[in-house]
Amino acid sequence: MGDWWKRWRKKGDLSIQGRVMVDRRTKRLLARISPGEIAVIDHRDLDEVAAMGLVGAGVAAVVNVSASISGRYPAQGCRLLLEAGIPVLDEVGEQAIQRLADGDEVRIEGKLLRSVQEDWVATGSRLTWQHWREKMAEAHQGFEQTLQPFIENTLNYAYREREWVTQPLSLPPLRQSWRGRDVVVVVRGPGFAEDLYALRTFIREADPFLMAVDGGADALLKYGWTPHLILGDMDSISDQALLQAEELVVHAYSDGRAPGLERVERLGLTAHLLPSPGTSEDVALLAAFEGGAESIVAVGTHSHMVDFLEKGREGMASTLLARIKMGARLVDAKGVSRLYRPRHPAKGVAVLTLASVMPVAAWLWVHPQLFETGRLFWTVLQIWLT
Image (cartoon, rainbow, N blue to C red; front, side, top):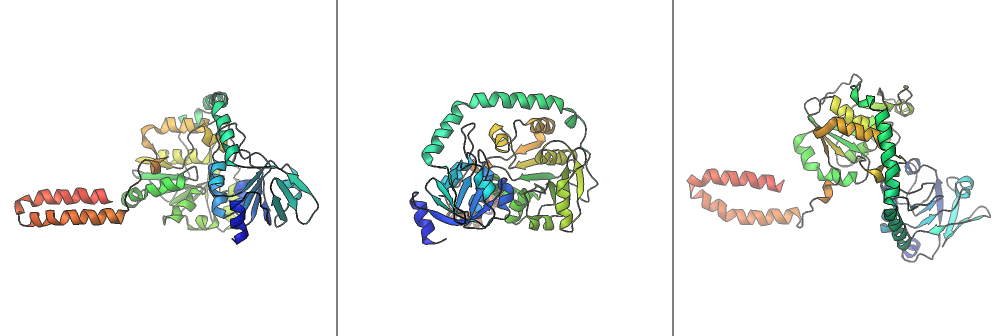
């Protein structure tokens, strides 16, 4: 981006002009927006994953018809945009969506959104750290009021849908089997990329079966791993990931409708259908369970109230039921990347360790009776350096 962009990022009162890409669904917009363009969305309480997508896409600014953070619950998306220095103009009203089309030129001047081609102006509010802190405080103060209906909704629907987990999930006839193997299920949820990277040694050494839910496949490919199976409605995954997967399973509605199948067939691919209630990630976890996985490592899954409210869901009944059924076989890797961060670079530690080991090795060489002790020490050292 040019110098004008850098100046504007430092001084929030300067204007910015650029092309817009418009979509009420941020997920769809991310599939086609280019770096330097302005995203026009309608996304109340912007979630962390959507914000990560906007940052990764290199958008010049975000114009939101709704409030990016309303104060209803502690939505995390705004924080990521503020940290990235991406300007956000909030609550500009419906005309921004109704009157703008992809490729139109707009100018953002403080709290104003001006159309370059047409003579109209919309007014919004600029997102600032102060505004974000106020809304987060409001969300924390009203947490119990938000939590109570969420719990009631979860328990009511869990009781109604209990037969979903009391009966075995009917898996399609797949070419591959994961019976007796560890299965890693990757979902494109909060913190998924960092947690997946933290598991790289486990994946490399244990060679688990890799099951991706929609966009989780792109995360696996980013780190050099090809998913054995992709399961989902196929609405947040790249064509590249679909083309590289060994096997595809489209999550269909209980009545058999499968909107995602059309996209798969358009690419000339074939897929199995798996009709089932519940979210795609819950169906994937249950599929791993019913298929006989030794253990199921979940990466990026949604597991608490904020996760589900950010997805627009007022409860988590299917997730509660699925986790009750899987029990101890499920290992949730959420947040594992935050548990330990090495203070020293790996190379520095390796060099320091090698220097320390050399005198010990020489001593063991002249004392053969201690050879077995030395070999044990070397084995432990190798594990520690992995």
